[in-house]
Amino acid sequence: MHFHVITLFPKAFDSYLGESILKRAIEDKKIKVSFYNPRDFVKDKHKRIDRPPYAGGPGMVIQAEPVIAAIAKAMAGRRKQDVKIVFLSPRGKQFTNDYASQVAKKYKQIIIVCGRYEGIDARVKKVFSAKGGSANPGGGKTDEISVGPFVLTGGELPAMIILDVIARQVRGVLGNFDSIEERRISSSEVYTRPEVFKYKGKKYRVPKVLLSGHQAKIEEWKKKKK
Image (cartoon, rainbow, N blue to C red):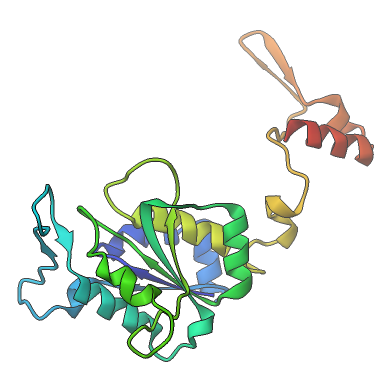
């Protein structure tokens, strides 16, 4: 699976993608992550991409043309039916594991568009949401997504969340595919060694059922703790 991230701050992803499971997934070529900075698609020598909004208002708005060019670059040479474009917005549809699973099943190319400042010129979504025609390269395969009922300073953190959750759905990213919580009975409580430890005079023990070896009872306990 290939993730294409449209962002003004690609270095913001370095730390998260450079550690643990996602780092290994990239090294093992289970996933690929590419970045496209809209600043690279402007002719202005100062690389300016933000302008005041029409009709006034606070903050600055990211211009449409450089973002469109960045998305078009990410889509170049790819079949439209393989591409899902995700626009990040606090007003978008709530992101869920079910959504991630469906996207992972249907698409191999995921384009994530990160906003900043007061947002991106709304015409970008109109260009890529319109169906059909070479002038509308999105082919209708676009979604407006929110990771929660709050507003962040930019789309980079939500993009990392979406990338992480969808990447987990790709076979081979997790060492054991059954590690995906959605595919097994998980619990809000987990325990490991030692079986008993003492803290400030009080003993803390692992629940007896987890030591019993009785798989049916263990699964029933897990269901109750979900």
